Length: 186
Ligand SMILES: Cc1cc2nc3c(=O)[nH]c(=O)nc-3n(C[C@H](O)[C@H](O)[C@H](O)COP(=O)(O)O)c2cc1C
Image (cartoon, rainbow, N blue to C red; front, side):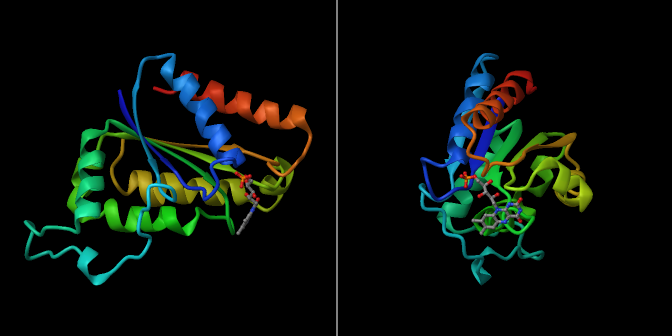
């Protein structure tokens, strides 16, 4: 499968990047093609502007070159993976703007039937996430508000909890979780 992986973290030495790399190690065992977009380090412009708006009366509209290039990468992919930290019980704003600008009406129809996987790092523990229903809240939004709304065939969320825990054993278990998620993907 051609997998488009989007990562949203400003620091390449972050746990988010380490998780992404282990996930990719797992993916590679099944010979998938992987196209990575590193939103911060590849200079994705995270400002939605008037020129990004879809024009219903002009389906031939030409988008900004950066947006058009990313739309072409979306069209070429069979599946999507997002690796990101939870910030304010949501995705980082740069990732949201990527969705706003690139997963626009222009490519919307090409998402139907494809798969999406959300790999989310959370500072909170699993117990707290369940106690306050954050796990369901975030999963429901991603799976229904995006996956189902875009008529995708499958949308799944996996959380890596307690990411600020400094125990090396715990961090290793999160990296192993990411590796296994990559290995069984698709
Ligand atoms: C701006 C900001 C907001 C955050 N909000 C949350 C949150 O709402 N819930 C949570 O569990 N963790 C939250 N965290 C903790 C991050 O999820 C945590 O820093 C991240 O998973 C650790 O991975 P990293 O080292 O790759 O950044 C927040 C962190 C930042 C910087």
